[in-house]
Image (cartoon, rainbow, N blue to C red; front, top):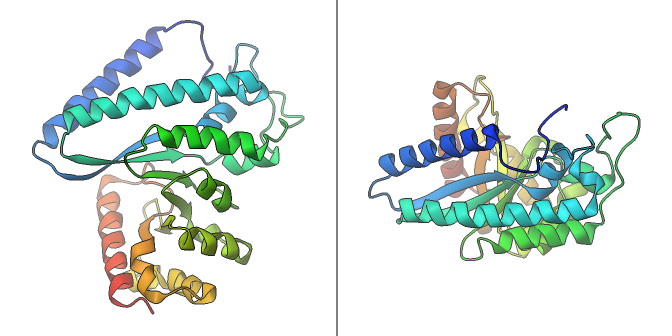
Length: 267
């Protein structure tokens, strides 16, 4: 296999993963004693999972519509149990559920390659994609759900119809083709998580300069400057998994300063 493959029954890898997850939850509980506030829980979304996981024949789950439905249902049930466990351990937390979907656009366009690499899997119907995401969002109906994609051409309109609270994206990949969808999303109450700070170690510009493009987009869309701080959250472009701990701290502090700059001077 070229990656993770679905099995008929739990094996050693499953037991090891559950053990590590339990250790992580123990640590989270220990360091959040008395904490009250937002807490993000992050998971890979159903369509990126379907594009990455393999069936027993070596092809992606994406090649089998029934397997895609089963995978999405299994993910929903797993998340439901996991969120309940996090709430039990951190009762003061306001949980934000983030689903990572970097392969979503490729799934919609039929650009996911088969195991042989000579062809691509058929594009999945947009209504099927939307329905699966809506079902996942319903797992956390009492709190915000954010979908993150660091790929070009994020389907803002589809995600908005699926009922997600916010869309997280790499701001540098936006083009003017996205303007209409972004404007409709903002007017519909969808929050934008704009990835403007590099996710790997590099020199950082001044905070106001980091969000200059956001201000330019806002003027181009003709949206109210007063809405900017309410509708936009400043984030790293695509997570901080590849960053050093020291840079991760600097990047998050930089995001906070850039957000204050937007709020103080939206124009």
